[in-house]
Amino acid sequence: MSKSSVYVTRMIPQQTIDTLRERYDVEVNPHDRALTKEELLQAVRRRDAVISLLTDKIDGEVLDAAGPQCKIIANYAVGFNNFDLDAATARGVIMTNTPGVLDDATATHAWALLLATARRISESERYVRAGRWHGWAPMAFIGQDVDNTTLGVAGLGRIGSKFARKAAAFDMNIIYTDAKPNAEFERQYNARFVDKTTLLRESDYLSLHLPLLPETHHYIGAAELSAMKPTAVLINAARGPLVDEKALVAALKQNVIWGAGLDVFEDEPVLAPGLAELDNVVIVPHIASATTQTRLAMGKIVTDNVIRVLSGEAPLNCINLQVLK
Image 1 (tube, rainbow, N blue to C red):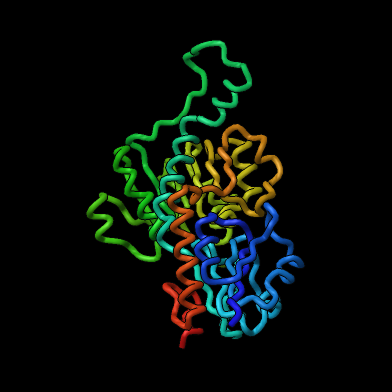
Image 2 (cartoon, rainbow, N blue to C red):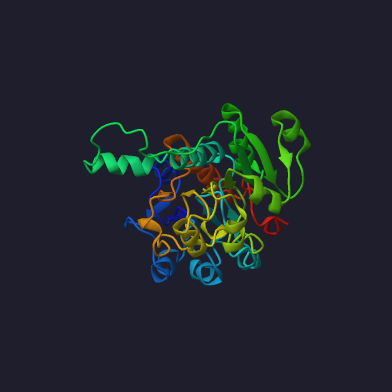
């Protein structure tokens, strides 16, 4: 009996690949880049399972190319806005992701962005590396205090709540928005549930931890940026399209807000014109979950889901639950 065929759309930890190869015929995208749509359509043909990334748009055309024997598309990511869930459900294909295991890494990374932006770490490091530093100066690279300021959190889910908890180390005042108040979190961390208008007006640091949905697209635009303090800092390690990137560039140029720290972008890997030239923004290439431990944990979830589904069992987690009925 021939082994099931699994395709991996981009290299992930070798340990994950090796585990899969103990059971299946596994092929991995040989290129260190995302596949084009045409390449993806060809690569998934006759596969029993596909391990995808956020850069792979999995729609009806891709699912049809894979064929009726394809049982699972396992996203190597917690997000799944690259999935057409209705198309998958209609074809009986199980869709999974990797929730939970990257929460701590992402929350900590958002703090790294916040601190780096507040204290102008990237800007001042570039200055030293360029050989421009000639000694201590009292007015060089003046940043912003973090301690005893107000932290605004948009979205108090798994990652947002882990991010907010760390504010206690800096004696920060926590305000947040979410679908509904979290009384236990408020009691434990002296946090305050507010509306969006208040969040924008009062936050010294505003960090986004929302899912990308039609109603959260451009959650931060020109109007919202204008409503923020001129000393405010915006952090986004969630999804790029939560922020109108062109509006953010204009706001940073005009000092409408003080700075921003970004791990994600609206049209990755393309940046909005002018963004890369600004000194008051920290920009890194979508690395919030990029720790060895987290990547391996993501790989284990993906592997477990594929093994269970190809063995005729339900996956550990399924995004389109209707397909299991």
